[in-house]
Amino acid sequence: MNKDFFCEVVSRQMLNEDTALIEFSCEQIASVAVPGQFVNITCSNFLRRPFGIASVNKQTGTFKVGIKIVGEGTEELASLDEGEGTWILGPLGNGFELSSDKYILVGGGSGVFPVNFLYEDLVSKDKSVKVVQGFRDKSQVIMNNPDYILTTDAGDEGIKGNCCDGLDTLSEDDIKDATILCVGPMPMMKAVSSWADGHGLDCYVSLEQRMACGIGVCLVCVCKIKAQEEGIPFDHKRCCKDGPVFDAKEVIW
Image (cartoon, rainbow, N blue to C red; front, top):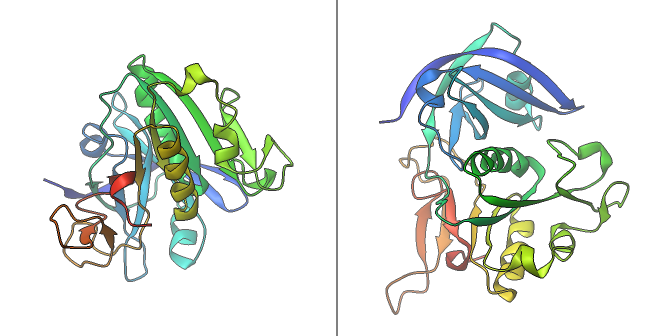
């Protein structure tokens, strides 16, 4: 059962001018969270804010989330200092199915945070992992690893282009029998889904939708998914409860 916990800030690191990485102490969340899940964090504004889990340390009972400042609520949360705390509901949603042996992870924007959790988990299990990251320009590059394939729209760091341009640099051996896991802006995930389909690869995406309750009650985050029943054009699924992870082939982009 998901529960609400008061979580204390262990550390705060500003990754660039508008993005913070916050580490919270909560053994209950850290002990059960899996890659792809998220938490709903309380701020002084009316609604909680959802954030994908960026990292977990089961030994210390802590977890991290990345917070990009886009308004008053995220600005407040990104300003939390060590020793301060807030109420957090989680972990929420369904994570990625990680039964394959070979993965290509693709992250863009704030999607690089859940991709980081994926990377840490898969490496710890000795899985084969390649990572492609995409950003607008050098100033937005965060959570980067020298082993990753980096792309920027501006071309001022890494490969000039988008994530699909980065995917095109992978070798046939890298691609063969790999499963793609993708988190980021909808246009990026749509393009990566098409790239995966063109290469005959399975692709799973984490849909980012506006959320309120985070537990499937309010229906704010419903998205269109291809219906399984014949004669019905589409079905509605709740990103928070039925997702946020979906098979890219099921998504109506």
